[in-house]
Image (cartoon, rainbow, N blue to C red; front, side, top):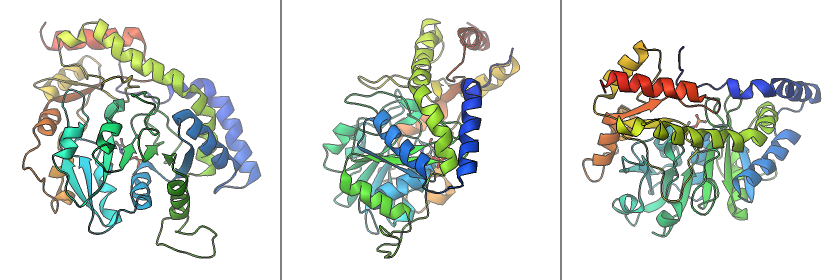
Length: 363
Ligand SMILES: *Cc1c(COP(=O)(O)O)cnc(C)c1O
């Protein structure tokens, strides 16, 4: 039996009829941009996250850019971001006019500590993009205690729980992605911004609609960045399932540990007081690509996602790291390997993964 790295379809199979009905309703209603489903989903998603407001946008990348713009980030500013993340976390910064400043991560959790953020702060630091990578929960309150607002990048952390609440309600403002393979995935691109600051929420609504509040006066150069009505209708059917899917993802981490995976490779450590709804279950080992090849031969998919950290990507060459090397980032980039996880993966499949890892490492 093959064990795929992820499985975005099994979980939504029982919802298929309801989703199809919702799609037909949107088709019949004929209102495709900023209609009733977007408005209802924004309220439902805000409630699920525990923030006062949610604003639907086109995708998780623009969500970061717009959140930064709402905070007033612009030319001459610096925005701190971890180099070990999905590329979009940093790509979203230059379009504001600000420059990305790369910070390190703790390779045992894959997230940045407040100390690592502090190490690269300057008087120009205007905001920090704190990434809840792989579903783990970044220390947002500790970072904001340094005196800078945080944009939480929640793209991989739908359903996770952290100290003091859920990702998306821990800092000034937060970005979310509904890319199909994420923990809460639509039938195409989609994203949202959450905040409990009314003024920021109003700025986001203005920025996502071409920089206009009333569609007559255009006060800032903004974006055409909305969540589609069709995607909102799909997401409204899925959202009530999120906490159950998240519980399963958290339980997979437990089960991998109980099966002895931690004797073979280094397991990801949940951040203090966090219950991660693991988006990817990422372990560390000395020769990950060799292990991946051996696992593949026994039908178990695995993959290193961020083998080259963002600061080494050609597009980022104008912004070298402030401290030279980022040792935690380099270690994680070299050693990480994502193993199979999904909202429905069964214990038999997890056993097959652990057995395959044990055999591959000759234990
Ligand atoms: C997926 C992802 C994004 C970007 O989201 P899109 O909806 O694909 O634009 C940003 N940050 C992280 C950490 C992601 O995983």
